[in-house]
Length: 210
Image: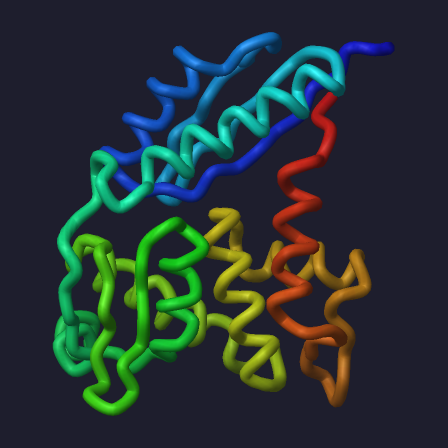
């Protein structure tokens, strides 16, 4: 069985990333960790070893992240309500709260959009929520003339943030995967956007690096 290199991505933020990187370095067995790169949105983990060992190591990493993010674990904040109007006042732009909540959940936070009071209920740090909303608003502005439909926008926004990738690169890669098509000069998603997101995340996580 040949030795291979693989790269994985764990969404996280700030101190949480440093804690997770330390725990992963200490507790991941049976495989060589080439390096863990900490960026604005998470950890990029490069591993080298036999395919079966890498699979076991990745399962261990997922368990480490899950345990760390349990309600009584380190790094969890108290549940807060953050009004959408407060966020808009801070970033000076509107944004879709639904995709903000979805991304927070994918990052391991508790999050819920309270449509009756127009608030977000979450254990994420309020400053980070505002920063994330600002990034979403920026992507919306960047792609508004390129894409058609809310689902397409949601897909590109989520993929860009969760994979720390430029929106235009998400579009290019998704066209190659057959996820996006073109209609009247604009890009449109061909499948359910959450399913499409899982496909691109899976492709990113399991891409073999030379």
